[in-house]
Length: 111
Length: 116
Image (cartoon, rainbow over all chains, first blue to last red; front, top):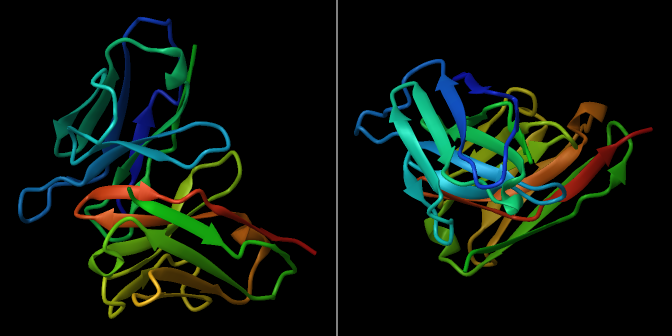
């Protein structure tokens, strides 16, 4: 099983300021075709997770451009350029290199 | 727009069975892999099961293998999860998730509570 480790687990941020979450996998997430199935999700209380970023750095439809993803191999980062109030909640990274998906523990973002 | 609606969650006793359904719309269901993921309230996300687009290949987490069965009816655009021999630790919100070449769409979830 690929273990996903997020840091920090909790982050208090200031409106308008940047924020960053790291995610590390226990093995490289690049498959034999060179595609890396690393995604980021945002979850508000009582809501399902919502896809933000897929394949490391691709923003999903409708996701604001203040969200960006980067990384390669085993180290990945989600960045929010200027935090807005609606960005509070939990953020999860997920690997889909293996069909047995695994998730990070989640990072709680508070204002 | 992708739309996934889960149903079938309920309060059951340990050892009982339950079948979850996920009605899909807004996309070509028969062309998408599908998964079930669960989340204990206030806890993290745990992958449960996968099925390929034709229903010919399935995979399960160790915690549910032999008790849960994933299936699909492409004519009805519906995904299922048959859960037998339920345990207290199966208590969670169950989400169906569309997997389309690395782009993932989630349903709203359905709550399963296993308690005596």
